[in-house]
Image (cartoon, rainbow, N blue to C red; front, side, top):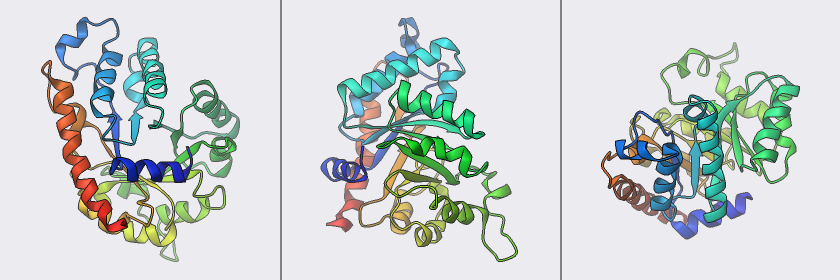
Length: 274
């Protein structure tokens, strides 16, 4: 999916919502545990209920790998289901990979050749040779960790060198030598507030994947105020705030209502682009 196609989907759906499929076997409705594949059954219901309200889905690999082979099968089935039934959706494998070059080559092959996923999150802290294998695939996206929403982000990402440049700023500047804004995005946590202004000074045209809105306390209005660009430039993820709002047999309908609320807020924010 190209950058222009992504923007077209945002305008058409009046949404830049990504639904995070952080599917925990211990949190899904109990009646689904009778299914042959409870994880896939849950994901399928969520996807069918929200697909017209979002532009992306982000399965978090940890939730699937924790179940071993069964979890990986559910992940593959989920990806195939989205691609077959809703091909306009942008699929993000939230894997946070990043290793020496030959290992990254295998990770890239797994996600981009075997699974044919649109994008994968990558940790940049081992440098260019750990990221470049992911950038070798035309039409695929690398989403680099830049400034995350967790408490520990302050431990390293906000530390400054002798010239006052913070580590996340160094990542943003240096990584632009590796790839273009047609193949790289950045993860920026919604709880970072006005730091989006600093980020946009360095990467004005890149898309940003923004987790942390909803359950983690990030403000959509603040993210848009400081982070939106002329092509929106945002993919805002919500996981728990959508997929776990209800544990009854009506969970999918409840998730749809939660997604509708976010989409309506996003439509208001997108008026600024008209």
